[in-house]
Length: 469
Image (tube, rainbow, N blue to C red; front, side, top):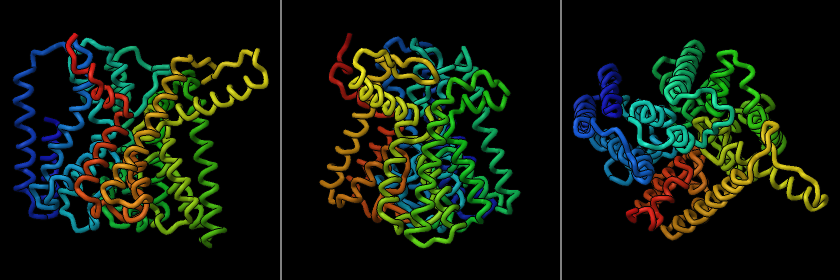
């Protein structure tokens, strides 16, 4: 029902800009709203899901079904004609990935531009928070569902004892940041329409753009403001809430992760800046701007582009792939493994090396001064291995679909991490239009896997999942 109302809200630009899409947008909204109302009326008295397996199935189906309905406006307006293209674009938006099949977005109707932006804003946090707020008790730990769905959120130093407060606080920060950056971009001289769309797609770590050249045409100030929005989207939202409400004592629970994220960002931005200046002869001011903005975009898996990165030095592109795999902080809108997991992996490697030198020393892996249990370390290692294995398998399948090795690696990594732009034709200001229908289906599945961090989807593939008892 919410998705249907959001589609109908796209009638505002359809009427304002007279783009001729009011009828198909209305039909799309009604076609989405009515099934939602019927489902609500049929199941409104259901209060529990005693079977945990149904909860896992619900999580996966939520994203798939909303992506299926989200593609209706593309097909109804004629902006996309094939199922594979429309589903790819819709899944990319709902999972806030940013990969696109549109080679020319500036020719799209205003209603479709807003719908693309809105899918990412809604997909960034809106879907998860909406479900946790309105779904009745399902007989399982709702906070566990929250941490599984909200891009690797961690409950270290959880700021609220009730799910209602967690939802309200997190959503409040998300909306506040959205309003703030719309205002800042508008005050910087940007048209209000552009400010809304650009904020929606960057505060959600999405990366869809209303321009063919992404952020390149923006002023330098506006690019830095967008980088600020991307940076905020990469910080744990519970930490932001505690910061904005002056609860300083609760910040310490995430300082290790924040410090590691900012350190990684600073070192990477310095390397890219120096590479652009010394290797590619960029002027210092441009090298700093492009280096900072693009590094923030990659590490937060947003995918917005300050320049055509496909023309950049190959080691920079290789670094970008690694950074997108790392991702930003857990509990943010970003994709990737998350800085918290990467930090645990790094400290576990350091512990193993120290154990070789001092086998009798007691030196546990610590996070924020507290020992990390072996169970958590094992889970992190498993997720890392599954992540890498999924990328490798996706790369092989894409190559079997006729995509060359470089583009296959770039596309697999970009789709599962949520970064968006790949390598080759799908990198830089390019798109995925040249991919076959099968390859687009594989990429769509990788987006879903990445958004749900693989494990939730893989559980459904176990034969025991479908057995009774």
